[in-house]
Length: 239
Image 1: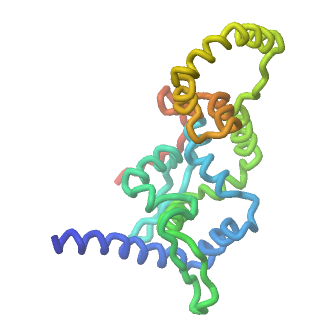
Image 2: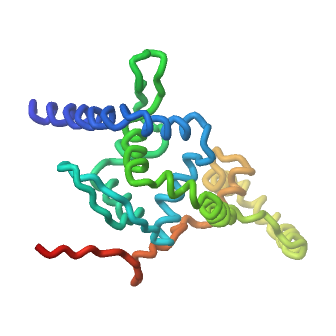
Image 3: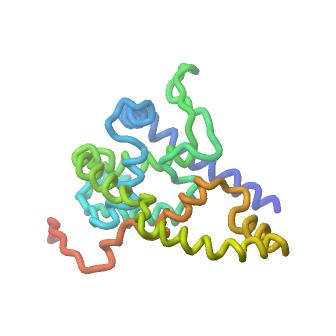
């Protein structure tokens, strides 16, 4: 039991230590502050849409340069959605989330105690991944396209409550014939019980919203389910 307690507390500490090292670099911290303080054109909603939907259906890939521990640099193709999914497998949603949800902390980024932000470990971890892999730079370059895609996809979530007049009239005529049945049910006590089960504590407006809301479905189809063609530069070295 003692070992379990040690591992559960040491993992967040190790993660927080690496996050402090990354955000000690002023360039990384400034790019985070611009987004969290609202000084950037990019919103958290846009970032979340890009990594979860836009990159998924468009199979966004671009080259990045990675620095190795020995100091050498390598160039590789970065696939946003696949890497995002692998990060979710490595961390839980609590430890990898662009939004400031669940257990919040005060993160001091300078020696001045007044220089701090209210955030979460998951938010810091997500933005370290996003900044390190140039995701923020890519969104800035393609912001208009991503915004249009998000607005178009979320436009038709709710249906308009429009009922033709003919249908309304026909329902009224049918309703008159059913009044006698309703009175009979009221005497027995069935009609009231049915009304309670169907409506419950929900208001009429909420019931209409539930009826008119489309069934939940996948917003974006993964482009990785089909064959893709990418152009990459390969360097072959002979010893």
